[in-house]
Image: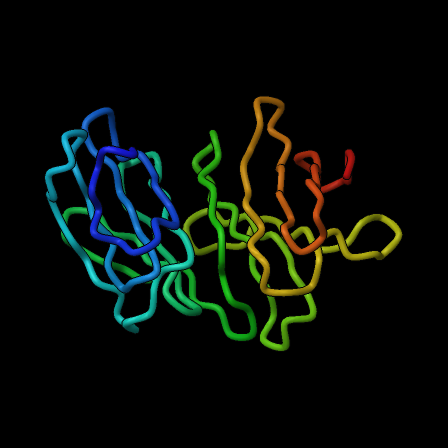
Amino acid sequence: LNTIKTGHNILRSVTYLNEEQIWTCGKTALIKCLNIRGVLKMTIKTKSGNWPRDIAVDRDGALLFSDLKIVYRLKNDQTEEIITLQEWMPTQMCVTSSGHLWVTMYNDDKTQSKVVRYSGSTVKQTMQFNDKGQPLYSGNTYIKYISENRNLDICVADNGAGAVVVVNQAGKLRFR
């Protein structure tokens, strides 16, 4: 990656489309697809003109990206809104081994955060509180990187809390 010149001032996210191509985004409205030699193959621009919070690629090879309160899916030059939120801002995303999409988000007043699992545009699971009713994640706009591990646990690196929060598939806290 160090040898690929993306044209972004600050490279925020890179996701692999396949062995030959990657998607990148930075603190601009542009999302770029490059081949492994760094040749630009495609550029798309967010509708809002703001930089996307994150990008991901689903099992069908479609690009997923967040733009303000909407998560879009781009496949074969067709862009569709798959998730539209009202009082929450989507941030980081992760496509799971089962093909679902995990999205970290914070509320409009920036006091709460949660993680939501989607199948298409349907909410399948929400993780926000532990079994004692305490928040699992810090309530702020700090980045919360998300990933699914080999045990199918959901791992969130909560920058605002200075912690890694791991919950099992059922949403039960395993450790922090």
